[in-house]
Length: 445
Image (tube, rainbow, N blue to C red; front, side, top):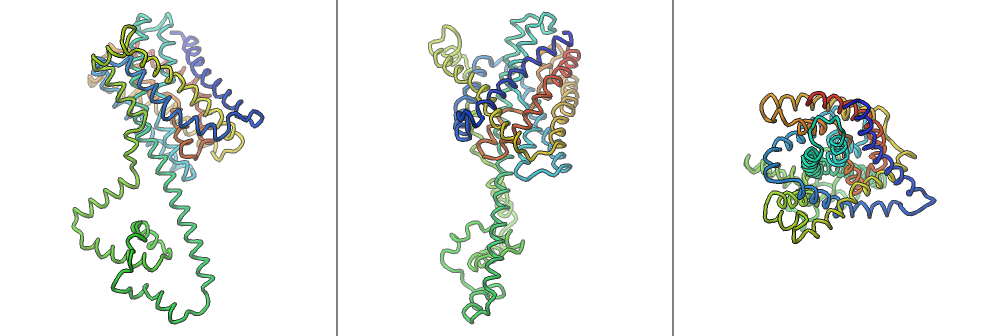
């Protein structure tokens, strides 16, 4: 394919998203009042529970079979590698640039999670339709390409909700903990100033627990100090606690000293799982939809019931597909509406935006070439599957996943900053995708 042909294909794919983004910003203007913050939040919830799962399930059920799933076994590892390497680069950015704590999950997610569905669904069919395409007949190329794109989108969705969602959640929860500590410190300091009068004997006895705690704990101390581990952290930082909490902490410390090594390890694992992992996201709507769509696609009886013009239950598949078609425009409109707020006021540094662009469009594609070439050299990918290789390479080159905007909207943090990142990365995408697509086509042809 000629350079100009690839450029036009890539440009059209990204212009569609940018135009929808502009529409979202336009209808979110104060003069219209039809796409305010409450409307965006409600639409985001509908997209999370209905549109995104329907898109994943319908595409997988139609395009994935048991045979194709066996042939594409390397793709899950390829996507996982792109997420891990992107996260490493994102962590380096956080070390180099001072980023507000609440936005760290957004930065890591933007570097790790690429748009592995929407862009591919637009770009691959367009490439297959070109006369000079190196991927053979248009219909065969289109069928195989949609299968690759469907599995890519499903994998990206699963990793996104298991990985990026938890990163944003942890960043928000840690920020909340810091805010609570600051409030408690301020309250303690105020109490210290107000209690500067000489203490009576009764008051002295109340505060004597710091040097000689009573032998017995007060009633209900366990309930009053349920977050004992957090209280221990606060005590180490010099924060003042209630007397009953301090006594409970001392008792807990004595109990921990008597624990065996195995019990201590179990306690730490439980604490980490509670603080940093949200196992409910294993059953996020998109994840469940990916499982259901895969089962329908690879199990012949289910496939015959629901997929195809002669299927008895094809009306279910048609209805789900109709809902799924609304996912991409809905998310894009929300991004455009949030962008209006981000343009007016954004705390992102220009160096941070440039760093994310460098990671997504320079560093990750270079790493992707080495990963795919190494897989071919080791025999993990057939040399004759040029379209499959092309898709694997594209998975390292796409702009950030649009569902990151859904995650930030759900938590109510970083919506405007996320939109600014999307505007910059998707504006650069036509040129970056064109240049890399040209190189990738030359490599796989």
